Length: 277
Image (cartoon, rainbow, N blue to C red; front, side):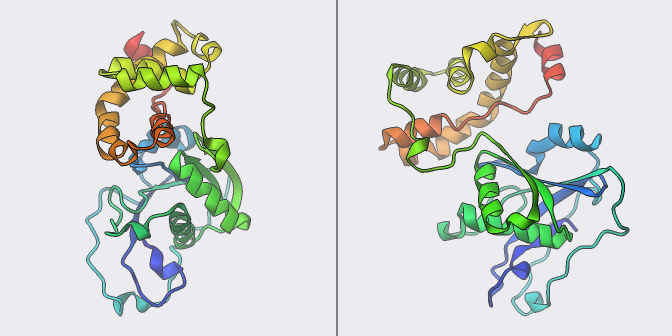
C-alpha cells in the first residue's frame, strides 16, 4: 500500500498520524525523488515520469483505498523499510513522487505549526527510509525546491544530486528590485481581469524577451507558453488567488512575490505545438 507513516521513521514518543501518499514508477538502481510545490500533488509530475521511465504505469499497483486509522499503540512497532522484491540492478530508473502533507491523499494536519519546509523535508527523508533508499537524485519545484534545499542541508549524504526549479534561497536577495519594469508588471497584473491578460504578464515576469521570441518548429516559445498559461490560469490560478492572496494583500512586496510564484505548465512541447499551432 503506497502510504508512508512518517512518524515511524522520526524521533518522538507520540505518533501524530501523518501519512504520505506516494507512487513509484519504473525499476532500476538509479533513484529519483520528485518533490512538488505549493498545492501540487504527485499527479503534477506526469511528463517528467514518462520522460524518465517511459511509462505512467505505477510500479506499486493500481488505485488503493484510504488506510484505516491507527492508534499510538498500534504504531509503536519499530519502523521497517519497504524492501524491493529483488535487488535493483542495471541502468533503469525508479521514480517516486508523493503528496506533501496537507494536500492530495496525504494527511492534512489541522494546525499551521505542523507545516514548514523543515518539517516537510523530514517527511521526504522518512519516505526515503520507508522505501529503503540510501541515496537519491532529488528534484524539487517551487516550494518543493525549498523543501529539497532543507533536505540537502539536513542529510547531504542521502542525495546523489540536487536539481531545483523556480526557487528562491530566501533572505533579502529574494525581494524584487523596485524599478520601472517591476512597477509596470505589478500594475498590469493587478489590472488583469481575464486569464489571457494574466498570462501575458506572467510570461514577461518569468522569461526574457529573447527566450520568448525563439522559434520552436512552427511557433515561437511565446505562443506556446501563452496557450499553456491560459489553460493553467483557468484551472488552477483562480484558486491560488482565492486562497492565498487575501493573506498578503497588506504587504506590497509579499503580494508581488506571490504574483511571481506562478510556474509554466509541464506539458510536453510537441503535444502543445500539435494542439495550438
